[in-house]
Length: 109
Length: 121
Image 1 (cartoon, rainbow over the protein chains, first blue to last red):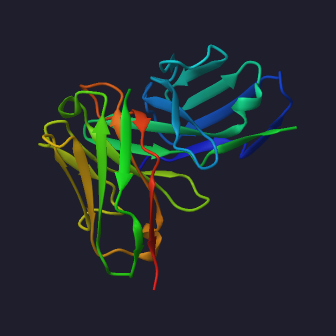
Image 2: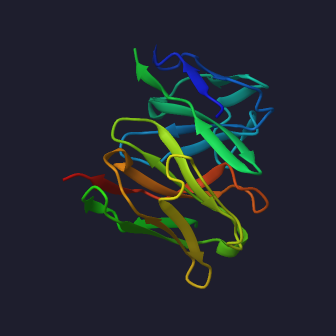
């Protein structure tokens, strides 16, 4: 099983500042990497797939980069609605397989 | 508008069974793989099972293999998760999720609101 490790576990950021979340895979996942945002009591929301493609309706302040084993989610200027937990997910489509990182909580500093 | 609505969660005894349902609307259901993903209280996400759009292919996480069965009825736009031999560690919110693209299983772009399954005596 591919293990996904996110860092940091918690990130304290002031509104308007940049936030960077890292995700490392235990082996190469190519560009099969997605990022999700989850707010309390809500389902996850797809932000990024293919490591760097924004999903429909996702603001341009969210960007993803990386390939192989090292990935980054950047939020260029944090808005109040961006404070949430962020998860990375590696995926393979055949045979289907997926594992998530443990999550990074982005909180208000 | 894509909508996914899960139902069927509840409290069940260890060793018991439960069947979850997820009704879908707003897209051509039979064209998309569907997945079940769970989240234990206060914990992260775990992909549990997936099924192709036609229903011809299924896949399970090792943690549920042999105990859970995914199925779908494309005439009713509904995907199911039959859960048998439930354990305390199966306690979680269960989400159904739609594949982003019709030719892939993952990732998932739309998720339901989730249904809580509690396994406890």
